[in-house]
Amino acid sequence: MLKIRLASFLLFMSVIAFGQADRLALVKYRGGGDWYANPSALSNLSSFCNTELNANLDPDYATVEIGSSDIFDYPFLHLTGHGNILFDAQEVENLKTYLEAGGFIHIDDNYGMDPYIRPELQRIFGEDALQLLSLDHPIFQGPFSFPQGLPKIHEHDGNNAQAWGIFIDGRLALLYTFESDLSDGWEDSEVHNDPEAIRREALEMGANIIHYVFNGSIL
Image 1: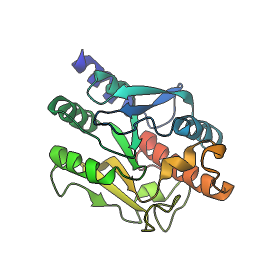
Image 2: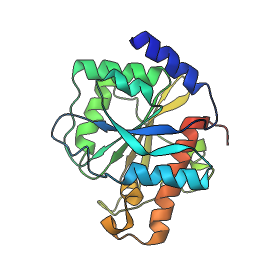
Image 3: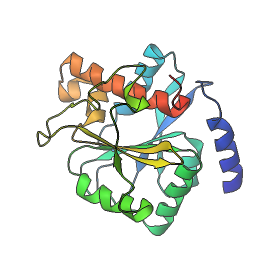
Image 4: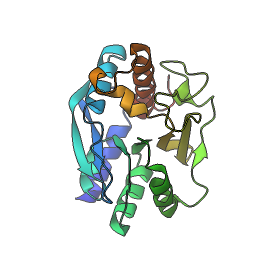
C-alpha cells in the first residue's frame, strides 16, 4: 500500500502546475503542543492562492498525523503551535520518507515551539541540516517579491524573522519559519486584528511558499 501511494505521489509531484482541486494538510502531532492553534489559516491561504495565483486549492484542508501513510496524499504539510512536540521512531521514519519522496513541510513557530522542534529535526536530519535561507532563494522571488526575506508579522522577542530550510538533493523540502508568526497572519482578520497590510504581506509570503511547492523553482 505504501509503495502504491509513493508511486502515485511521485507522479503527482511531476506536474508543475495546479490541476484539479488539491488540498493542503495540517499536521497533528504528539507532545502536548497546540497543533490546532490557527484553525482558519490554511483555508484563508488556499482562498488567497485561488484568487491571486489562479490556483485550484480546496479551502477545506485535511488534518493528518505525522506517522500516518495519509501524509503521502498531500504535497504540502503545515505544522504549527506554541509548545512541545515529540516524534517517535516510526514518525521520524515516516516524515523522512515523505520528504525524500518529494514532499514538503512548512513548520511555523507560533511562539514557544523552537526549543522543542529543533532537537526533533536534528534527530531526523542531523545537527547541521537546518540552514538559513539566502535572500536570493526562489521562495522570496515570486510571484511576490520579498527582497528582505521573510516578513515579520508579530513581534515575538523582537528579533528578525528567520527562514530556515532543510534541502534534499538541492530541493528545499522543509521550511522552518521562526520569529515571524507567519500563519497568524493567515488567520481570520478578527482573530489578531492585524493591519490589512500585514495580513496581506503574510498571505503573499504564504502564496510564494505554495507556488514553490507546486512549481519548484519555476517562476
